[in-house]
Length: 451
Image (cartoon, rainbow, N blue to C red; front, side, top):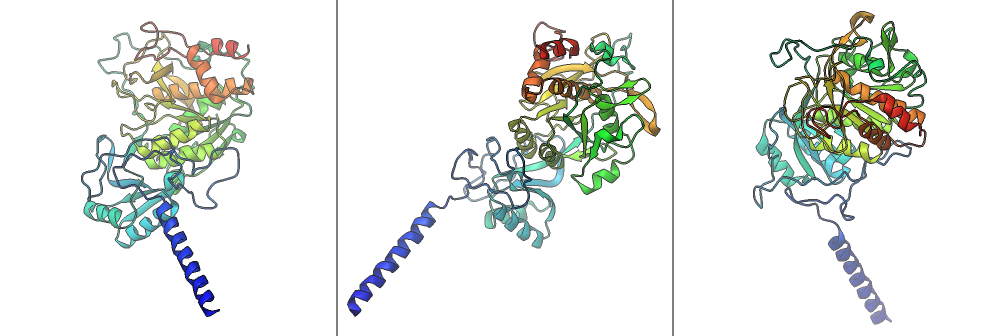
């Protein structure tokens, strides 16, 4: 009897050891820095913290972003600092690290904080941390010893496009023809647009949309992403307020393109017009969570941010239209996120259909819209003139809201395609670097959308 009990005991122990080893061998290993991780691989654990994801039909934050390769490793032992292939607009000493699980992210954050590394922010998308340190050797050691990131990047400045100088020698000698209060008429909009945008949420990621006599308060909702942005956005340039007024404004000489739309104000840059890619990415994710169908980004960066790319991809996969300005720097090469595939990149024209010299050009340009002396909400509850690709972008966002409200079964991506295929071709025949598919033609768009 004792021998039988002993045999059973040995078999149970052997089975337990086999199960333990099998579980250890099947546990997915975290790839080393430099590995080309396929986010679609089923064995990569990506989990968001409990309580972060709000209920709804949107894809969860823990769903994998589209694959982008990690930078090549420097060696078999040393963790790789970001390659710095995009140096422009880099924020000195700021890094963005994503992890395969929230537990790894949390472990790294605790270890980094104990070593004096500043944890600036974090978000569920990609289990991502925004940190600050000047000690790259310490950062490399922590990555090797604590948690190896799934992606590792610098953080980048994001800014409002600078006001375009009208006296630049590249401008035509005769000057540009401004729009004033006539932009909607020029776009083919009559007095029939009172209900355009009804039931559609447009997120304005910018400076905070302020209270203004030209903005009906019942159509504006205000949210925070960064605690300092709302207060900073309460005064200053009023850039976000001007952008919102082009969509829903109502005042003498000012009529929004989709006045019945809902505006969701998410401040992501300060009143001085400066922010960062991580905070902008958080704002994009928040806009999706809040049910926006259209995201307006009259801002940008020349730094190609991994987390911003993933946030935009998250919005596009949730069928949210993302509209962004190309920039006001008279360059060949548009800003991010307008440069990303799937984003509607908007340049500026004057009232004589001239592409204005400051509007960045490139293969990524999709549409152009009014961008010279457009009537918009100004300081001190007044109405003033607003120029630049910042002004052109909300015309496209408002046009999307108008199409969606009039076609309940249409998706934002289908509405975007409707705008592009019905644009008025200008410049070189077909798509070109200055006009993209052409100039927004809302009369033609609405006629086609009604069919």
